Length: 175
Ligand SMILES: [Zn+2]
Image (tube, rainbow, N blue to C red; front, side, top):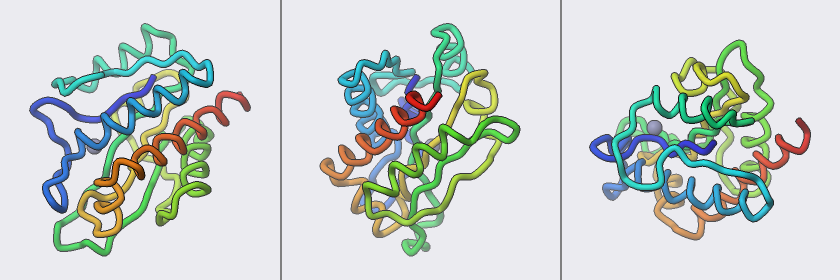
């Protein structure tokens, strides 16, 4: 299950040049789904268009589908006064396995020139309430000078999507 964060009236974070998290993450997520499907993985997206979607239905979709893995895709933000803060971080829920998060973070770091902000534990709703392995990836800072330039670049988003998909594949193959 691939979960593009935010959507509809919830734009998520807004960054340099007015880039919106919801637009970045739907593009990356749809490409992650395509790459995985090309590798024979059955994929469901929580949203395929720009709609409002609460957190609880995202979890129940994954449960109903009996998904093996749940990956929520986001972009990060901090104050617009901190363009120096850049990097990728991937989260797992405390008390759950970090293996999926680590597989995704490692794959991103091995294929993209980005700063490593680490694999971290945090109590985000969608990764805490899903019963299967789950990770939430922050693909970069929309408020970061380096990351915003990358996130605005369609070719870079494709590379990010491929890296996330490869990480998920590595996880599924080692499961
Ligand atoms: Zn977000």
